[in-house]
Length: 78
Length: 134
Image (cartoon, rainbow over all chains, first blue to last red; front, side):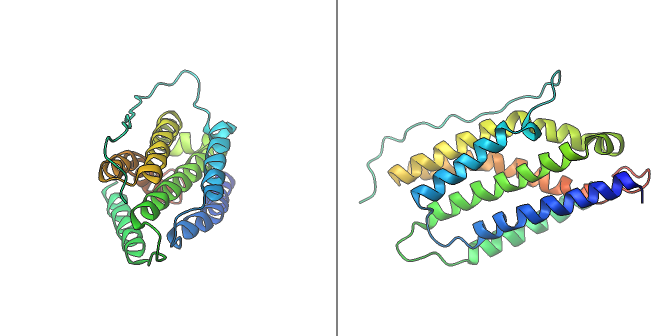
């Protein structure tokens, strides 16, 4: 095993340790998120998108697929 | 690659079973709870994948360049997909209508699909040994 591979595996484990609690918390979620918790989640997500790890490499191109969410015209459930 | 697809499918099946069997607090909307769970889990997997690739880019590019390509695809596409899914969840939280429910699950399906790819790819990172390319 090379030092680079060992570093990669350690990184994988570290990220796994960080990710598992988030996934377990989501799986154990039994009720709707409060507005504050939901806003906190959105804040964490946007902060991640702004981090260097999430910045695309300049000069590369990838097809972007988006879905438009339209406002349903139905009445809310009672 | 097929081996990893099978593993990813098995992992997803376990997740779906666990999620599907989990109880929902009385008074909570199970559809919304599932939607929020899907959003959280998809984001956690995608975030983890891009961070592992970023922190080991030279090794990943040398041993498994397809993982770097997937990470790049995620960096370019996932933010828009996750924001769209978040808007759909917002809309369902506000309206709670069948149409909003359908729109939410359609919007969630795309980040879920990317997360499934990333989770399969994460397994291949642990297989990077010597000169072996997965």
